[in-house]
Image 1 (tube, one colour):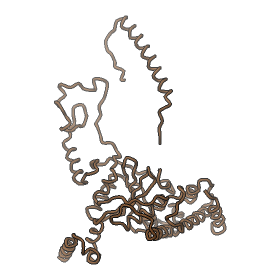
Image 2 (cartoon, rainbow, N blue to C red):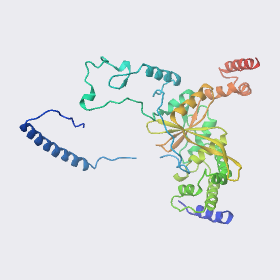
Image 3 (cartoon, rainbow, N blue to C red):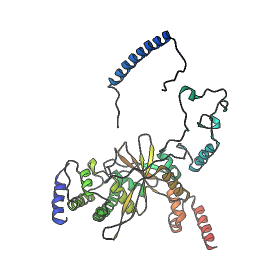
Image 4 (cartoon, rainbow, N blue to C red):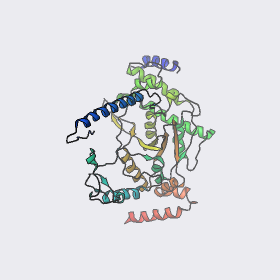
Length: 403
């Protein structure tokens, strides 16, 4: 990693600012006792050999955020309680929820204490002809749903008819993915044409302009730790210990990245992290939803937005914030978005690829916008098949509002 930018920034900053063992009741004969001793000794010998073999097994290995850079400061992990939705790529949110609740009501408690469903019981339920597992030394507790049940990313996008838009992978895919989501209606792949590069550069520079404008106040209200951020960006160099110097150095880094074109590759350490994503939400003036996907296509939702912070001098400072959401809360929130025909701004991060994707929605996005904007509908949507339906809904809505 080149050292010159950080050294220059530090200089500039200095100048500018500061078992059940089964209890066998009864008696045994002496011969039986001796036989038990011999068998026990042989079993212990065999067990010792097996343990030694397991300890010598060198073939078993355990393998352990590929993706954008780590956040500028540690965020508290969000809990992920169990999902109440069915785990299906083709599921309907409300229908699945109703089915789950119905099945719960049909479940019952057996004498052994296990919660089962009527459909899963293959024999008598009174336990008269069954051997209780507790007789063999086991105790059965109530079965409960495991917490943190994930949902696959296509299910999140299904109510919005969302599909991925791939973008070039050069380390700056976050900006290109946001541009693709904002501008694309049906493209599945975005290429670096001169027009696209120009548009993405505008987005990137606008985001970095906000980051630079917010930096001093972000540091003052402890949203950004400049020393830690410099350590992440330049891992081979020790960061300044003085906060003012570190802030100036980080500002210089932002200024350099702001003018770097988006079709140029960048080091892995410079990949977009939470500090960029939260500023994107402030730039958009609406929440940004990022689906964080693993190699099994399981996804958790991150929501970035903006809010006001109180500075030490009493002033109000607006800046971006956000992070991982509770799974159940995320699904409920997106369900309300879909019910109200409000289109969220989505991006998809596949961690195992270290790559962001945009999301396009086809005509659904245009139709939902037209439903809430008659001027937009009359100007841009007259050629669509659903235009008459939208106009009729608008007229009906106006009449209801009049009365």
